[in-house]
Length: 269
Image (cartoon, rainbow, N blue to C red; front, side):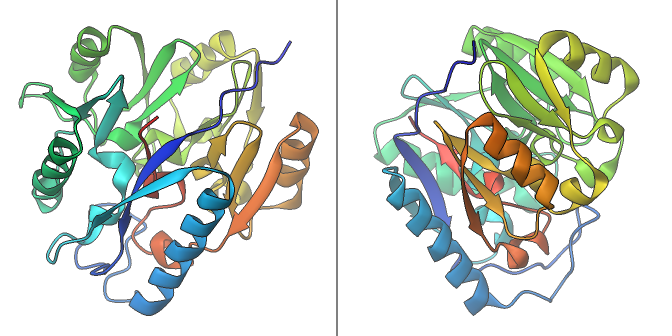
């Protein structure tokens, strides 16, 4: 029997007031190609969808000089009123943490952090049942998994990413409910693929076309799912068969930085 996850109540997004692509730290990044006005409109459409789903959207204002600050999920993991802040691997992103730390502090969240030794970013973490899957290799280290397990008091399962196009786990793995998930096999090592097959009762493969359309970077809230426009029909058909209500939004400007819908949303509760 499939268990429908509870709808998201509250989420944090960053208004893309200064969104550009100024450097390259993943293979998707296209410097100086972003249309800022279009990006803002796309973000506003996403916020409208979330609001329509009954999700209270909190907004942090983007600061100049941190173009990737818009990707709120990367900033860390919120659990039980506390934020476990990210340790960004690349120096270009490290300043983002300062602004988010202040926002969380001002809004009553307890601040927690790993040691500064091991890198870890929120986009590499996906909850599945009572476990936390962590994509390792490009942004998060295997060594960070033990720290995450201790801090969050949860079983942490490292999954080794092998293709830099899928530098975060949420680019290649999508959790739907307690039984069901989608994944792109070629993004993961063979042993990690085998592990997922053992842990996920109903595991669906994503096609290359679907994963390039950011299907894995969709956002699930209860029986609703927000997906990027342009995903193939077979992916949408599978979502409907699972019983999900589909909402589509164009996030083409954010793809120029290698980010999608899930990247833009940090679930608070």
